[in-house]
Image (cartoon, rainbow, N blue to C red; front, side):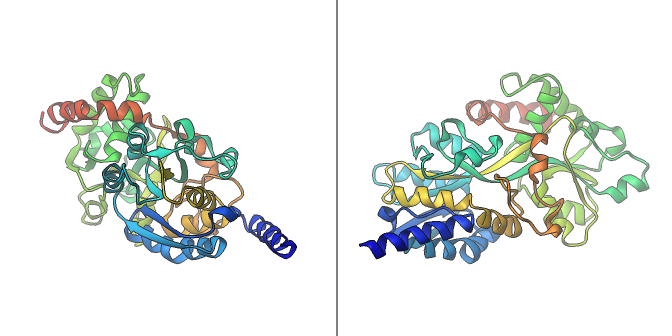
Length: 349
């Protein structure tokens, strides 16, 4: 017994030095089921995150890939008998899941919430952000220099008539479109509860638009010369820049919009204790560094050592003051009405 206690004590110490959450011995058995993003995010998790966590917990992790909306749909379908322990979802769907009672609060005794940036904290701590990106201004600096147009600094700079026919805007159906609408509203004296100023601004900006993208991926518009500017995410811009395309991301002077990837323990999850440990593990400095490298998600805690090559490609802790958090509870309540108004006043006018 003494040897076992000594071993556990040494394990806790080693994990603390590695920047990882120490496992709860009572939650060390079984198979943790995690539902999260697919694509490159899933690849990063399988290669750099899950194997290390499995070593700390003497457990196995089953990963179910899918979009945030699909994951929330699964949680609703399984509400009577949950099969998923941890859900990795965007902050918008997270608010819906929390309101539906699908999530259980994060345990502050296990998860280091005090170390997490305020912008990554969820209302009521029903979950916690473990990665950050931002919605802002994406543009081709070569085009702006060649045409003598100042690079955009604010949301309304996109209304510059010299951008006529050079602007691709996101549709209201994706999160970037919501970011544009709310960002423009706040920049003009409005908010999520007073969205009128946002529509006034977006109508002016939309006069320059050649199309409204519904895919959340405007890279082809840039590559084919159809866009000189757009509203996009910093990580998406970094991915396109890696292809040696001249593209820059700008944080609007009147506030970029924070997009948060969240980790959530499912209400009545089969392995809730193990799930809390997994959420804590994601906030460790080692996991945060791996995720930044693989997914271009910025860190939500201080003290994460990043390769200098990542500079400018992720939301740095020094950029946190430039981010504005979305009130997703209000947005989700109004989104259908906003979509209808957007279709009438912005895209189909």
